Image 1 (cartoon, one colour):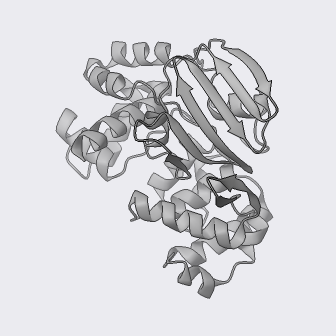
Image 2 (cartoon, rainbow, N blue to C red):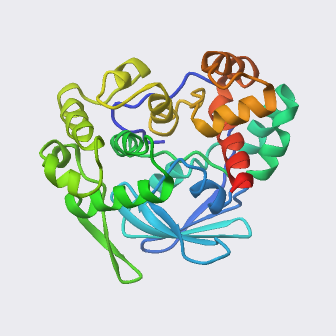
Image 3 (cartoon, rainbow, N blue to C red):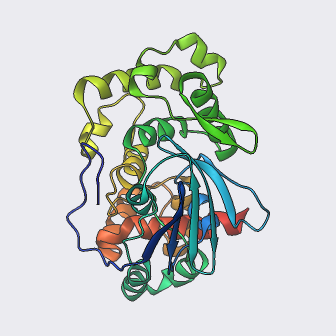
Length: 298
Protein backbone atom coordinates (compact mmCIF):
# COMPACT_ATOMS: atom_id res chain seq x y z
CA UNK A 1 0.00 0.00 0.00
CA UNK A 2 1.03 3.65 -0.36
CA UNK A 3 1.94 5.39 2.90
CA UNK A 4 2.09 9.10 3.66
CA UNK A 5 5.47 10.75 3.31
CA UNK A 6 7.19 10.84 6.66
CA UNK A 7 4.83 8.39 8.38
CA UNK A 8 5.96 5.18 10.05
CA UNK A 9 4.08 1.96 10.57
CA UNK A 10 4.50 0.26 13.95
CA UNK A 11 6.69 -2.83 13.99
CA UNK A 12 3.91 -5.27 14.89
CA UNK A 13 2.36 -8.28 13.22
CA UNK A 14 -1.10 -7.46 11.89
CA UNK A 15 -3.70 -9.95 10.80
CA UNK A 16 -4.70 -9.35 7.18
CA UNK A 17 -7.32 -10.56 4.74
CA UNK A 18 -8.30 -9.72 1.17
CA UNK A 19 -11.51 -8.25 -0.25
CA UNK A 20 -12.87 -8.09 -3.79
CA UNK A 21 -12.31 -4.71 -5.48
CA UNK A 22 -13.68 -3.25 -8.69
CA UNK A 23 -14.73 -0.03 -10.37
CA UNK A 24 -18.33 0.28 -11.47
CA UNK A 25 -17.76 3.63 -13.13
CA UNK A 26 -15.57 6.71 -12.89
CA UNK A 27 -15.38 8.01 -9.31
CA UNK A 28 -17.63 5.19 -8.15
CA UNK A 29 -15.53 2.60 -6.30
CA UNK A 30 -16.97 -0.60 -4.86
CA UNK A 31 -15.39 -2.98 -2.35
CA UNK A 32 -17.17 -6.29 -1.82
CA UNK A 33 -16.91 -8.94 0.88
CA UNK A 34 -16.28 -6.45 3.69
CA UNK A 35 -16.65 -7.69 7.25
CA UNK A 36 -16.18 -6.03 10.64
CA UNK A 37 -17.27 -2.63 9.34
CA UNK A 38 -20.09 -0.28 10.25
CA UNK A 39 -20.05 3.39 9.14
CA UNK A 40 -21.75 4.59 12.34
CA UNK A 41 -19.17 2.87 14.53
CA UNK A 42 -16.25 4.07 12.43
CA UNK A 43 -17.30 7.70 11.99
CA UNK A 44 -18.80 8.22 15.46
CA UNK A 45 -16.01 6.84 17.66
CA UNK A 46 -14.15 10.13 18.05
CA UNK A 47 -11.34 9.52 15.58
CA UNK A 48 -12.55 11.76 12.74
CA UNK A 49 -14.68 14.92 12.55
CA UNK A 50 -15.57 15.59 8.90
CA UNK A 51 -18.17 12.88 8.15
CA UNK A 52 -21.94 13.23 8.62
CA UNK A 53 -24.82 10.75 8.28
CA UNK A 54 -27.24 11.43 5.43
CA UNK A 55 -29.90 9.00 6.63
CA UNK A 56 -31.21 8.21 10.08
CA UNK A 57 -30.20 4.56 9.73
CA UNK A 58 -26.60 5.60 9.24
CA UNK A 59 -26.13 3.63 6.02
CA UNK A 60 -24.97 6.68 4.06
CA UNK A 61 -22.29 9.14 5.19
CA UNK A 62 -20.87 12.16 3.40
CA UNK A 63 -17.59 13.83 4.19
CA UNK A 64 -14.02 14.56 3.26
CA UNK A 65 -10.85 12.46 3.26
CA UNK A 66 -7.72 14.36 2.34
CA UNK A 67 -8.61 16.46 -0.72
CA UNK A 68 -11.53 14.25 -1.69
CA UNK A 69 -15.22 14.87 -1.03
CA UNK A 70 -17.16 11.63 -0.89
CA UNK A 71 -20.40 9.87 -0.09
CA UNK A 72 -20.19 6.29 1.16
CA UNK A 73 -22.84 3.62 1.49
CA UNK A 74 -22.47 0.24 3.18
CA UNK A 75 -24.94 -2.61 2.83
CA UNK A 76 -24.65 -6.42 2.89
CA UNK A 77 -20.86 -6.38 2.86
CA UNK A 78 -20.63 -3.91 -0.04
CA UNK A 79 -18.93 -0.55 0.47
CA UNK A 80 -19.73 1.93 -2.30
CA UNK A 81 -17.79 5.19 -2.53
CA UNK A 82 -18.84 8.08 -4.76
CA UNK A 83 -15.92 10.48 -4.65
CA UNK A 84 -14.61 13.66 -6.24
CA UNK A 85 -11.17 12.04 -6.31
CA UNK A 86 -8.95 9.38 -4.82
CA UNK A 87 -8.27 6.10 -6.58
CA UNK A 88 -8.96 2.54 -5.52
CA UNK A 89 -5.70 2.31 -3.57
CA UNK A 90 -6.37 5.55 -1.69
CA UNK A 91 -9.77 4.45 -0.39
CA UNK A 92 -8.61 0.88 0.31
CA UNK A 93 -5.89 2.34 2.51
CA UNK A 94 -8.11 5.02 4.06
CA UNK A 95 -10.64 2.47 5.36
CA UNK A 96 -7.85 0.07 6.40
CA UNK A 97 -9.45 -2.77 4.45
CA UNK A 98 -6.31 -4.90 4.52
CA UNK A 99 -6.57 -5.52 8.28
CA UNK A 100 -8.49 -8.48 9.74
CA UNK A 101 -10.38 -6.86 12.61
CA UNK A 102 -12.09 -10.13 13.48
CA UNK A 103 -8.74 -11.68 14.36
CA UNK A 104 -7.77 -8.60 16.36
CA UNK A 105 -10.97 -8.71 18.43
CA UNK A 106 -10.44 -12.42 19.10
CA UNK A 107 -6.92 -11.73 20.34
CA UNK A 108 -8.04 -8.86 22.57
CA UNK A 109 -10.76 -10.98 24.19
CA UNK A 110 -8.35 -13.88 24.76
CA UNK A 111 -6.00 -11.58 26.62
CA UNK A 112 -8.68 -9.59 28.48
CA UNK A 113 -12.18 -11.19 28.60
CA UNK A 114 -13.78 -8.07 30.10
CA UNK A 115 -13.41 -6.28 26.78
CA UNK A 116 -15.69 -8.71 24.95
CA UNK A 117 -18.88 -6.66 25.33
CA UNK A 118 -17.10 -3.55 24.04
CA UNK A 119 -15.76 -5.44 21.01
CA UNK A 120 -19.24 -6.75 20.24
CA UNK A 121 -20.89 -3.35 20.69
CA UNK A 122 -18.45 -1.52 18.41
CA UNK A 123 -17.81 -4.47 16.10
CA UNK A 124 -17.73 -2.21 13.02
CA UNK A 125 -14.98 0.21 14.08
CA UNK A 126 -12.06 0.55 11.69
CA UNK A 127 -9.20 2.92 12.43
CA UNK A 128 -9.01 5.25 9.45
CA UNK A 129 -5.69 6.15 7.82
CA UNK A 130 -5.94 9.91 8.06
CA UNK A 131 -3.71 12.69 6.78
CA UNK A 132 -1.08 13.43 9.42
CA UNK A 133 -1.19 17.23 9.35
CA UNK A 134 -4.99 17.28 9.47
CA UNK A 135 -4.91 14.89 12.43
CA UNK A 136 -2.45 17.08 14.33
CA UNK A 137 -4.50 20.25 13.90
CA UNK A 138 -7.83 18.49 14.51
CA UNK A 139 -6.71 17.08 17.84
CA UNK A 140 -5.19 20.37 18.93
CA UNK A 141 -8.67 21.81 18.31
CA UNK A 142 -10.23 18.90 20.24
CA UNK A 143 -8.63 19.90 23.56
CA UNK A 144 -11.20 20.85 26.21
CA UNK A 145 -13.85 20.77 23.51
CA UNK A 146 -16.97 18.76 22.66
CA UNK A 147 -17.51 16.96 19.37
CA UNK A 148 -20.22 19.28 17.89
CA UNK A 149 -18.02 22.29 18.55
CA UNK A 150 -14.89 20.53 17.27
CA UNK A 151 -16.70 19.79 14.01
CA UNK A 152 -17.90 23.36 13.70
CA UNK A 153 -14.41 24.74 14.41
CA UNK A 154 -12.81 22.46 11.82
CA UNK A 155 -15.38 23.25 9.13
CA UNK A 156 -14.96 26.99 9.74
CA UNK A 157 -11.20 26.58 9.42
CA UNK A 158 -11.62 24.65 6.15
CA UNK A 159 -14.08 27.17 4.68
CA UNK A 160 -11.71 30.03 5.49
CA UNK A 161 -8.34 28.54 4.55
CA UNK A 162 -9.05 25.40 2.50
CA UNK A 163 -9.54 24.97 -1.24
CA UNK A 164 -12.95 24.20 -2.73
CA UNK A 165 -13.07 20.55 -3.81
CA UNK A 166 -16.66 19.67 -4.58
CA UNK A 167 -20.32 19.80 -3.72
CA UNK A 168 -22.42 17.51 -1.52
CA UNK A 169 -26.21 17.97 -1.53
CA UNK A 170 -25.82 21.56 -2.73
CA UNK A 171 -23.23 22.46 -0.09
CA UNK A 172 -19.73 23.48 -1.12
CA UNK A 173 -17.04 21.28 0.40
CA UNK A 174 -13.51 22.40 1.20
CA UNK A 175 -10.25 20.51 1.65
CA UNK A 176 -8.41 20.74 4.95
CA UNK A 177 -6.02 23.73 4.87
CA UNK A 178 -2.40 23.12 3.92
CA UNK A 179 0.43 23.77 6.42
CA UNK A 180 1.38 26.79 4.30
CA UNK A 181 -2.11 28.29 4.55
CA UNK A 182 -2.28 27.91 8.33
CA UNK A 183 1.29 29.11 8.88
CA UNK A 184 0.20 32.38 7.25
CA UNK A 185 -3.14 32.53 9.08
CA UNK A 186 -4.13 35.61 11.04
CA UNK A 187 -4.55 35.21 14.82
CA UNK A 188 -7.41 37.69 14.94
CA UNK A 189 -9.25 35.85 12.16
CA UNK A 190 -8.75 32.52 13.95
CA UNK A 191 -10.17 34.13 17.07
CA UNK A 192 -13.24 35.17 15.09
CA UNK A 193 -13.65 31.49 14.12
CA UNK A 194 -14.09 30.75 17.86
CA UNK A 195 -10.82 28.86 18.15
CA UNK A 196 -9.81 30.76 21.28
CA UNK A 197 -6.39 29.96 22.73
CA UNK A 198 -5.93 27.24 20.11
CA UNK A 199 -5.43 29.81 17.34
CA UNK A 200 -1.77 30.62 18.14
CA UNK A 201 -1.09 26.89 18.63
CA UNK A 202 -2.39 26.18 15.12
CA UNK A 203 -0.17 28.84 13.52
CA UNK A 204 2.98 27.83 15.42
CA UNK A 205 2.39 24.12 14.80
CA UNK A 206 1.95 24.73 11.06
CA UNK A 207 5.20 26.70 10.98
CA UNK A 208 7.09 23.98 12.82
CA UNK A 209 5.61 21.32 10.54
CA UNK A 210 6.98 23.21 7.54
CA UNK A 211 10.38 23.80 9.15
CA UNK A 212 11.01 20.40 10.73
CA UNK A 213 8.97 18.13 8.46
CA UNK A 214 6.53 15.38 9.43
CA UNK A 215 6.86 14.25 13.05
CA UNK A 216 7.47 10.52 13.34
CA UNK A 217 7.40 9.84 17.09
CA UNK A 218 5.78 10.93 20.35
CA UNK A 219 8.74 13.10 21.39
CA UNK A 220 8.56 15.12 18.18
CA UNK A 221 4.81 15.55 18.60
CA UNK A 222 5.20 16.72 22.20
CA UNK A 223 7.58 19.44 21.00
CA UNK A 224 4.74 21.03 19.02
CA UNK A 225 2.69 23.89 20.44
CA UNK A 226 -0.51 22.70 22.08
CA UNK A 227 0.33 18.97 21.96
CA UNK A 228 0.27 17.25 25.35
CA UNK A 229 0.47 13.51 26.18
CA UNK A 230 -3.19 12.71 25.41
CA UNK A 231 -3.23 14.61 22.12
CA UNK A 232 0.13 13.09 21.16
CA UNK A 233 -1.27 9.58 21.69
CA UNK A 234 -4.33 10.44 19.59
CA UNK A 235 -2.08 11.63 16.78
CA UNK A 236 0.12 8.53 17.09
CA UNK A 237 -2.95 6.30 16.75
CA UNK A 238 -4.96 8.18 14.13
CA UNK A 239 -2.24 10.04 12.20
CA UNK A 240 0.79 7.74 12.37
CA UNK A 241 -1.10 4.43 12.55
CA UNK A 242 0.70 3.39 15.74
CA UNK A 243 -1.97 0.96 16.91
CA UNK A 244 -0.12 0.34 20.18
CA UNK A 245 -0.93 3.92 21.31
CA UNK A 246 -3.57 4.15 24.05
CA UNK A 247 -4.98 7.71 24.39
CA UNK A 248 -6.44 8.41 27.82
CA UNK A 249 -9.06 11.16 27.99
CA UNK A 250 -11.92 11.77 30.42
CA UNK A 251 -13.99 8.89 29.05
CA UNK A 252 -11.14 6.39 29.09
CA UNK A 253 -10.18 7.38 32.66
CA UNK A 254 -13.77 6.72 33.69
CA UNK A 255 -13.74 3.36 31.91
CA UNK A 256 -10.51 2.32 33.60
CA UNK A 257 -11.86 3.45 36.97
CA UNK A 258 -15.21 1.66 36.63
CA UNK A 259 -14.02 -1.54 34.92
CA UNK A 260 -10.64 -2.03 36.52
CA UNK A 261 -10.65 -0.04 39.76
CA UNK A 262 -7.95 2.50 38.94
CA UNK A 263 -7.76 5.80 40.78
CA UNK A 264 -8.94 8.57 38.46
CA UNK A 265 -5.51 10.24 38.34
CA UNK A 266 -3.46 7.05 37.94
CA UNK A 267 -2.81 7.58 34.23
CA UNK A 268 0.59 5.85 34.37
CA UNK A 269 -1.02 2.77 35.90
CA UNK A 270 -3.67 2.76 33.16
CA UNK A 271 -0.99 2.98 30.49
CA UNK A 272 0.94 0.07 32.02
CA UNK A 273 -2.24 -1.99 32.19
CA UNK A 274 -2.98 -1.30 28.50
CA UNK A 275 0.56 -2.30 27.53
CA UNK A 276 0.36 -5.54 29.52
CA UNK A 277 -3.20 -6.60 28.59
CA UNK A 278 -3.59 -5.23 25.07
CA UNK A 279 0.01 -4.97 23.87
CA UNK A 280 0.46 -3.97 20.25
CA UNK A 281 -3.35 -3.84 19.82
CA UNK A 282 -3.91 -1.27 22.59
CA UNK A 283 -5.18 1.36 20.14
CA UNK A 284 -7.94 -0.94 18.91
CA UNK A 285 -8.87 -1.74 22.52
CA UNK A 286 -9.07 1.96 23.31
CA UNK A 287 -11.48 2.56 20.45
CA UNK A 288 -13.78 -0.32 21.39
CA UNK A 289 -13.82 0.74 25.05
CA UNK A 290 -14.29 4.43 24.26
CA UNK A 291 -17.19 3.86 21.84
CA UNK A 292 -18.92 1.32 24.11
CA UNK A 293 -18.74 3.46 27.21
CA UNK A 294 -19.42 6.88 25.71
CA UNK A 295 -22.24 5.72 23.44
CA UNK A 296 -24.03 3.83 26.23
CA UNK A 297 -23.66 6.84 28.52
CA UNK A 298 -25.25 9.35 26.11
